Length: 204
Image (cartoon, rainbow, N blue to C red; front, side):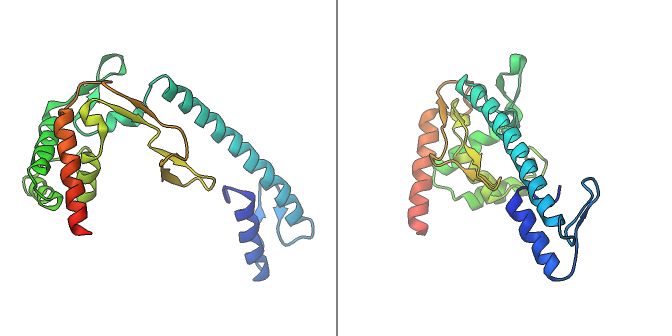
């Protein structure tokens, strides 16, 4: 695939054409240096883009229908502290869950995220991918409602340029309470949010 949309395809091939460089598409037998090359490329790129968008819309609709039924994406099973159980249910993986509680408890006590990250790495606590912990990964964990037993569906979406964006109301979201066993209590989760907000205000 040369590009994701007609605009990008034409922009790139025209820049190359100005430099005397042609692009030859073998399957379509199209050369951008010929008089009819750009016309044929425009038509075929438009059809390809339309086909891609139809496929993308279909996939989005599939996910939307699942979300409406309360069925999360399979990515949920990669959440640290959980694993997939019978009937595709989220079950607590205690070996990791103990560290989730540790992180929440320390933050609620006022310990900085950076110090927690350093402690986890110094004690060789493995992540889901067996990599080093980062402040970002710890902070994301602290903002995840999954740990108090809830689900937030459609956290992200892809824009017109196929770039993944955080969903701040651009598309629908679904919030499900009490969907699965919690690792931390709602009270501890809220205490951690309050403390992180205070820390952010102090930094600002």
